[in-house]
Length: 426
Image 1: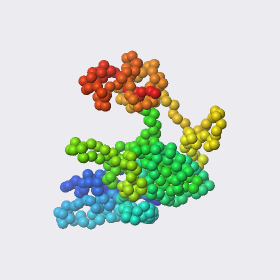
Image 2: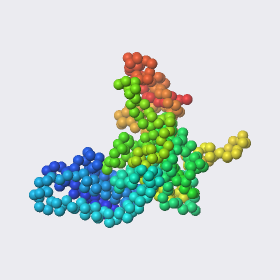
Image 3: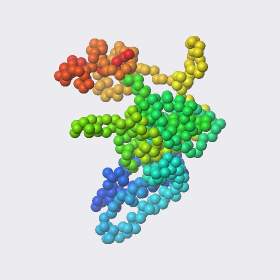
Image 4: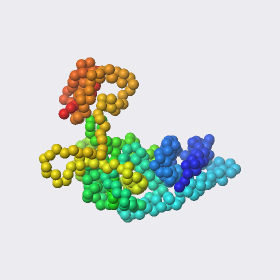
């Protein structure tokens, strides 16, 4: 374990050593636009996030180690300083002292983590090779980021009488399910012990962890208050996930569907999605390497959460099918008492979910007087509009995907100005 005070001191020494990498001004030169290097913007926020999830300090220490190595590998110096500035070469070696101070505390736990990951990758494919400390540091940071920003641990079973394994093995087979409920049922009754990555629907991801007496899954699904649909919440910026960027933490969910250009129709081409129908990605070795390491690190973090959770605080996730008696044939009314609750829909809640500006709120609130949540209950996907002057429903024209022409649509929109759009009911 490394203390936060020592981590802060090492980060400060490294920052003083690097400066801004400006020619003619700073001690060394570097280009932070190169993904091999970094600019350290937002590092304080990243460090705070890592400390909340990992009190041992290993994740932050490994990220600092990767930053030190990036400085050594990707920085340059001016030859005139090397030849003419007395003590310049000796001062360059200060960064080795910074690394030495860091490794005094993290070398042993880092070695254990690297050994575990090496055996995990070898069990997936003999061709994968060992991970680098930079890969592990960044993917561990991004696993914690995923847990911080969206992935939620939901329990299916928790028996405190059976101890949790130190490391949960990775199952190499990728499973596919139509929805998260089907994955949860398979995790309960069909899938073997271990950690499973699942493709949910077309392009969503869930992770299930199954051990004797303890079963849980990670997902980022929630109910959209405007449409009532179950959606996966993703943080923007996943397009950068192929870069092992030291600056920006991102989610590394696998891209199950790839969008590419089909040029067979000529230069204009068209965009097509591959993988949506045929499930070609059936083995974890087929997804990008960084996603595999991210998945392994996510498994480690989740299994630690599961092993340290007080069973008396656990609420099990349920589906309505499991709440009914298995062999019930009696056609009698029954009372079901689920251990979950659903937030009551309200006009205020829906209004807040629209994230309107202050000006828009001042305009819209008086117009909604007399309107109840039943009038705009978000059921269905077809868009209607409500005139704010008459509070009556009207069609909302769309220029694209409509049979009407551009001028006709624009004229109709002009007459419907001051309208509030809401989903069609029924």
